Length: 336
Image (cartoon, rainbow, N blue to C red; front, side, top):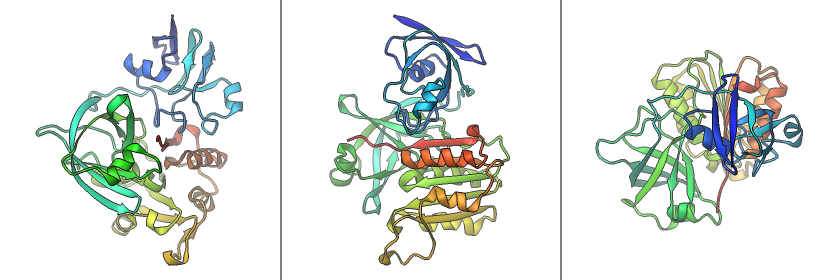
């Protein structure tokens, strides 16, 4: 059985099979809709179902609470059609500059940035490059069909090698291999670039970057891209961690602020200990943003980190006037 999906306000339409994910079918049909994590956590792909019914699948309550479901909203990265649908959503212009590719790569270098964070540097085949937008991610294609997604930490202009920041996850088979068994020159295979979490360069609004842990990786790519392209919009970067070790490139982030008057760096620790010798901000990182901004109506926000941080930031920032369509997010979730 197939269903007809109509996108509003464009009037574009495509077909989906029963059980087929709405986002995947749209991308396959050539329609680029907003998305980030692809697992129901970040809320970037939220759209309103104007007509018809859907199965919400694995949509997480934080990104799609019950009241939003009652109002007709769905996460297109999880939802499947149960009838013909008419969906209200933003469409992004497709670009031939950033084609989706499946590529082999070689592990060029493995460098520990912290006890639980590894910098993985990847080398592509000779004369090959991956064109991507700052903030996007790649997915490693593993045996048995499994995939693992990681944000690109290097800026697009600095593409001689690809850089990933990989956090070790308890029970994680892939990250366990990265930390305990992976060797330089190992061959991997990936697909990318993925995601619509990228800098909107056409805007002139001031920017708040918000990162938790290794959510720093895509923010690093965006900031370095902005510096390279001489984008001088005011930028405030809030980076949160439990302890100082989690700010594994603190000196680099501070160097951006030291060298550029339009960039401000605000590190925040939630569980600073005596060994951290910390005199900076403490508490939840998104709360630090709220402490500094009574009104967010004029801003754009780019947030990357754990789903809980993303959910809280979206709700609280919008309550301070941030337009919902100026909150861009990528939520990191982990698979064993």
